[in-house]
Image (cartoon, rainbow, N blue to C red):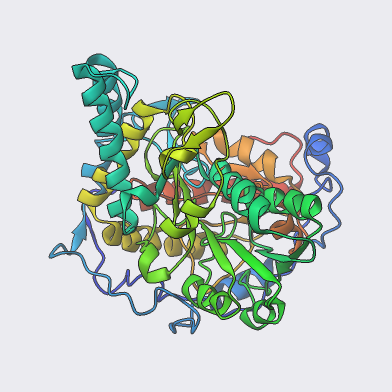
Length: 500
């Protein structure tokens, strides 16, 4: 734990500690570690990667933090980052709001480094959901009693909070969904089926999560359209020149993740949107990994659709939002049919409701929408720019420490990133490393992260992925690094029984 607040002035200027090293050589995360035989057979045993020389890793780690320049393609480069008068970040005060963090796992204090998968929930969110069920639980919009009015106010109030958080022009442009995956599918099945014709082109990125690959892939097959993929360089960054070469008058929609979930890469979203607009294309941003880590302004971006999941930003699972420009939502057909999304029904014809209700068939997830609103309130009180700086500090701290461990290969080295680090150890499958770290109470992701094309770009099937939040500390990172050192030493020495 940190004993005192961290002084971040001068060391945490977000996205300024940027890396400039060659890609490290590939590591064998397959079955070459003989003592992991049975587990290796279960986890990605067929990797063909070349073993790593630790001296090369050490040399690269010492060189990789030299660059301090901005990427010319960053949409964040001109956004000032301030502390609103605060020069320190009191992480210990923050941690008190998260009850789940104060427990032991396998006899050790829980260290939650699986934040890119899901974030933990502050007491304020938990209490807001409990209060809803204790006082206000009702269906919304249609009943005339007091509980229905309170539930409706809570639900529509949450919609307004989402609008403010991403700076959308109108709450009518905010659709509640179960999460990013459902949001992308909604756009693919409405915009895609109405406007994508045979021969049209859809552009996605190598860095995308499966949730932004599969829906467009399936739509392209259904509509006889072409799916084009933006390549990435050895750092794990999109190549703008290659992206521009894919754009044409046939491009109907460009859909990409604003932040990659495996390397933490921040893509040049604003630049990419501007480039697509020159060809009359529409753009969707998958904001699942960006919305909790950096300010989002959909009007400044001029994006057509923006989708995100609540559980990535301290809200419950099963709730998320789609922003869509009003003129587009008015043109699109409903995705699902049923109650709440209609104005009038006869056996001959149905008149649909106006957006956003046209896209919210059935009884909505009122309680979790209220929880999402409470989570956004919480993040707003802490300050998204404060969070951005502190998490960047944690990420660079972790990369520096892990990069100096003999045997660790850091995977992906984007110049602009959020709080994700991916690494592998030679001779030991990533999921086995994850299990060994769990013995120390360290919860992180070890696998393909639903981003197989991105990992295969680097010749891998899996990585170990610690991901950080503003309730994490450098003390927790130190404990992880020490555990990784022990695992790496055992892996190199081929000790018959792996224990740390």
